[in-house]
Image 1 (cartoon, rainbow, N blue to C red):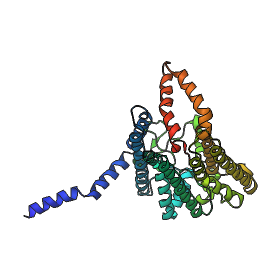
Image 2 (cartoon, helix red, strand yellow; image 1 turned 90 degrees about the horizontal axis):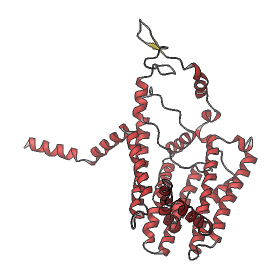
Image 3 (cartoon, helix red, strand yellow; image 1 turned 120 degrees about the horizontal axis):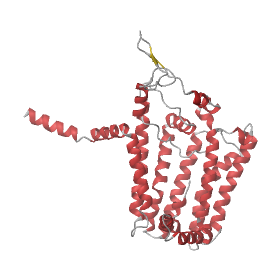
Length: 380
């Protein structure tokens, strides 16, 4: 009887969800590079599937959204694994974005929950639009406007939690290095600032202690070695100082930037019967361009040194937003009246040409996304 109870208890323990989860977490943290390669392969697959067969966009987007959400979970696992490493293990110097987002996620659990909600919505918004479209155009536009309102509320909350600092994209820390690689690097470290190189003629083992002196950097690479050890002004700043607080016209610019997608979606809903109407496009573009110019003007007047006095994180965010404005070429009336005809002419020219016809085929397959789905070109 006792042996039977032990057998049943062992089966229950093996089937316990917590044990499966622990095994999965260990698998991910010990194979970070392999997991990353699998994620990239699945994402690439979702870029190829659309247009290959009827109604292929929905299963393709299900896979893409699932991979993106799973990547968020994997990011948290890797971050926890690195945090649990012994203090003696040297961590790589984090990027300004990682320092800033880690500071707020560790300081405020509410910030982490809101940022996670925002990221999840962004990863699944196109999928919800595809599902809603099957219920009709009215339902589709209601869902689009609702999603944009929820995202705007999340961004306004994040702005409030960071004491009126601009948003960063993404609002959560990105995946760090492989914790296993850090441990292996630490095992080869000789206690000095340079790792001992195997088989190097410059290394020397002390006969009494058995310790080896570190190898010197290559004489041809001394400048790069020294530069890599220099701390910049951003490196010594506290994380929250990596973004200046916005007030006055700067705060107005950030709020306009946040609510622009809501106003644009409402305008698109209003003129949904006429895709070629320029009114929604002009409203949306004017709001985004105006908020950008207002923000730059505020930074020039308020920050010491103007735009040259910006931190690296602020410059990166401005650059991202600048590049994102290029997607206005693929939206609304600009796409319907100008870009669409140009793309068709390009795809026609690429047909029946070696290698180039593959690119033409991909462009042709994606035309229906740009034609029919709002979130296919959303950047915020």
